[in-house]
Image 1 (spheres, helix red, strand yellow):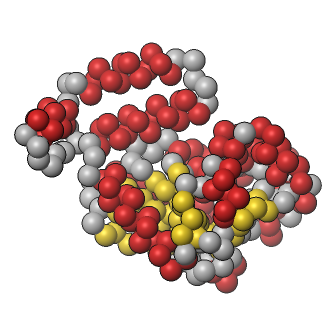
Image 2 (cartoon, rainbow, N blue to C red):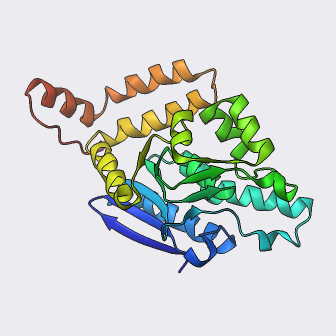
Length: 257
């Protein structure tokens, strides 16, 4: 199996299970990830998702380079588009929170997979990089765009042009990851964060994800869309429950309605 899945208390853990290949992304992993995402986004029992890699060496050390040897320009473009459609864009635009728990190397497609998630936490041994220039290639799963959005043009340009790796603490300082934890506690810390988020109003969470994504892309309609979505929240049962719970000094019981 290329993936392992475990649903606990509304949190689905998706583990890429190719430790012997440093969890490299091949066609099967992309297909299986796409299917797993479809399932979790349609399953009401899943409130949020963690994506991680098996073992302690790698989150995803890159794409499976052996699949590149026979590809021409049209095939390469199709490969990139397939990954974006099945996995990367689907994660970014998901209405449920999806975070990356980066345990080790996140290089090339692995860094891009982590960046497509709504945010990232990392183990102390994590390493990030986009080394595609060493293969005569460029990032093909959104790396040039998302890395620039996350850490700014200058540093993104340097990392992509040099192919250099950075460690977890530098990644945190740059804003690429939110938190760094010992590898033994990484998943538990991810669960703590998502447990907190899972207690919030699901419709408000989904709208917030969409609007922050728009802001990251400098959408000129972002402010107007926020006003519209803000108004829509007032028509929800969750808003009525949230306000009532606040005034009654009790914990809100949101239903996602």
